[in-house]
Image 1: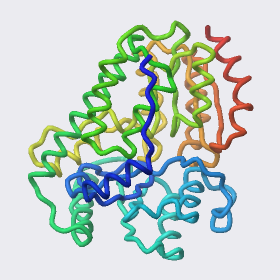
Image 2 (image 1 turned 60 degrees about the vertical axis):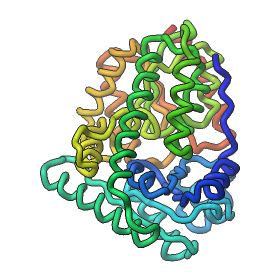
Image 3 (image 1 turned 90 degrees about the vertical axis):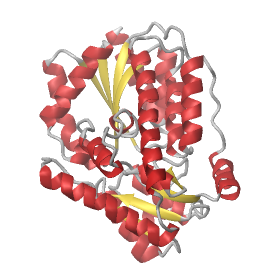
Length: 364
């Protein structure tokens, strides 16, 4: 085990601004063309689950809004996002789109707010044309803030996106084969550094982790983790303590979006378009339940997982709509399934512990 210790996010971001002159974009989940930001000397800083108790955000949101949106808004309201220069709101779901409207139109954060609208399935030629237009419009919006983009630099960053996907793919493959000497908690601590590290630094980190994590995984049962986030962190610690090994994942923050590289086209806009339409099934992209079931079963077979943990977020409508059908499909195929629900609060761990321990014991 390599015992990875993550850097201080705030200190790292401060140095990125002061030493490299980079513009910091607070990016809400999940799908966006990060290579374009990199090419314009802008660093995406993804906002998923900041460790804040939600207090002020309640005055602006309904009670039945997912914790990712609540915590993101709390971060802004408390002034914890003041180091950022701008915000980006991809249209991942209605809640995030509405959050963007709240921040831009009612809070007036004093920073540019940019929106990116991903198409939804079923996909066809019109969807691809629309996506390419969205990419070019995104560049135009950024150029008004950051100046002209260098096309050569965009090509270089798209190549770097391919490198990152390849290294992450090697880590995922090694883990699926049981040949990764790292705990569940450490694996995701490393993978999630890409949410704020510059790609040069993230690639260096991943390559080092790939070299130092050689070895056999713990001998417990293999699991598939499905959902939005590998969070709260306590769930990973619980699985480590029971000896269970996450052999693969179907997580929006991780496997669903990090393993597919940009396409091979020399045109960077076409390469980025190809990447988006090659992404695996996801409810935020309008994928069918049937496609998701096939994808999960393929991952289970490949990783020899003995069960699936559906780690859901409270009030995450895209994920919750599919959940009953996914669980029923797993039962039909003889795959054990456990549903966990979290609001990312500290009280989640105690509620989860008994159920996780019983599930792991059942499939061992």
